[in-house]
Image (cartoon, rainbow, N blue to C red; front, side, top):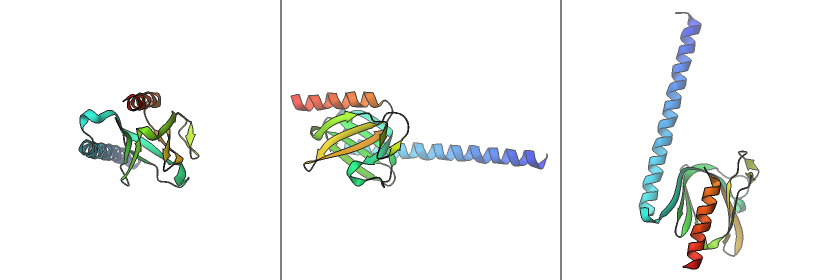
Length: 153
């Protein structure tokens, strides 16, 4: 076998191994997130869940924040996010939410499709947090419906 062909095959095998390793790590991270979410919230409390939500940040913390993938959970009382690495929790009580919308960017960061941004009140001050999620419009509708339920109950 010619050295160039052997080198190309070796590179291909290494690439495949790296892709499989990355896929394994992502699946492991999602299982760990799911276990932690299940321990925190009973299944009957979870209205919507996304284990691959990408946090874009919290407005008051400025531009230099660690973005991160984690689990976004909508319950009857909270919009909750557990970032996987480094692990950190964010909980927004539904009764504090003022607006949910879909900007194209947040804190100067964009992925060129709509994000899920939540504006809420924290200690008497307006705050914002945003994520990249699948189907941001479905998330907005679910959050709005849960907020309506709280206000009517």
